[in-house]
Image (cartoon, rainbow, N blue to C red; front, side):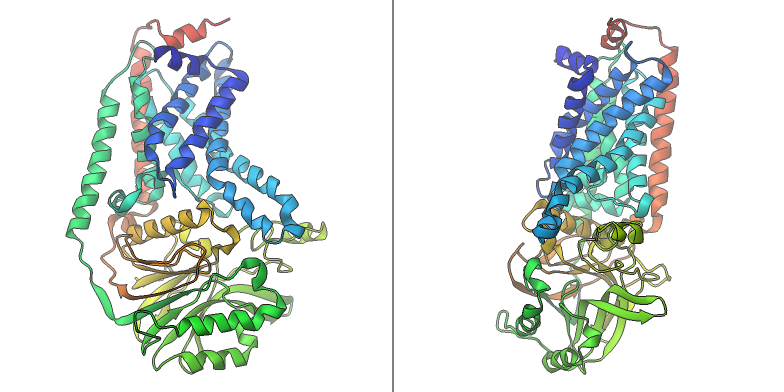
Length: 543
């Protein structure tokens, strides 16, 4: 094994890049729907060894070491994001005649851009690097910090954050109640990179980091078991939920000739009998994102038809496009409406966090003049809403609506008005991505938000995966991916805000400081030790 480790450290050129690319791609299988997180005990130590190799004689000075480390981190990240996000290309095949030519660029350029964060993370780690077995904390500081930045810069895109690798299954998922996914990212790197401390570098290795990693992992698992063992199922008996998953093909949905058929499917499915029960009084009926192929406020006949199917005191919550004329033109919003049993829209929310290239184009005017448009093909793009809102229900607790990928942002799902809602409501249209890993990853991130916030989630997705999720992230009801479904359930009770909800980004900062401190102390201690012949010192003598 020592020869293999030395070969990785001494690798250069295309071999070094290929090793990093394959190790990164292997890491992607730790994410949903595979959850093969033990693979990280192989792939992340490889990244540690590649950073060890950044001190070889082929690299001159600090600048050279930083550039070499950036390269190793970038190629590792590129493999990770390429293998984990390839399914985004499916969206460009919905209207293949218009967008198929863009698919290769999207599939490659997005991972290439996201990998820059990992490149800078690895370069930052190199500033704290040493021959100490505790150098894994330098990598944790770099990659963990890079993941936080990835979730915040340029509107943020924290999809498949490395912290999710510690949330596989109901038990491990409870760790997200202690600290959100950004903070878990630091722990994940320490835990999964720990086997690298067993490799003899500078003549020194140690079992202690690996023992610490095992203790941390088992501690999180034990905490999860205890937390679930103490949990109680307390439904809000006054609020019955019915979720409609119509499974309407995205390519057919917006064709003018299908307008009435689409609307009729929603009406008929909403009234179906499930286990001998139809749409009952007081039900909260939920339809997915942009459910209807028309602006609901411009179709009074549609509101009348909705009123006809809603029993007394029932409410419909539906995603819908909303158009508004202003002095500067016509604005289109991706919205959520609450409709009462008289067909009156009683509340609305406009999506705040829009999807780049899906709902708007950066430099919209310039790119449209060049003939480009976003996938939704709304001229001028969607307009973002002003702020997150808590919506009120007469027959149930208040809730925060989250449209599509708004739910993937840790610590950013509440309205910020001081009101703690009774639940989160997520409407989405994952039909763009078919039967790929994308919808599974989206569902898992929603489940982790439930754990972080201690709030149940009601989720309606056009083609799936719709679900009722309790405050511990458990799936109480779940629809199939790609098929029609009507889900009936009772709203679970919210629990007290867990530590993750109270700490927010502070937890990530604390983890960053701990990793930085351990790496800094280890670097200082390593400098005081006498030089010993090792794979690294031999690497420095390679001509």
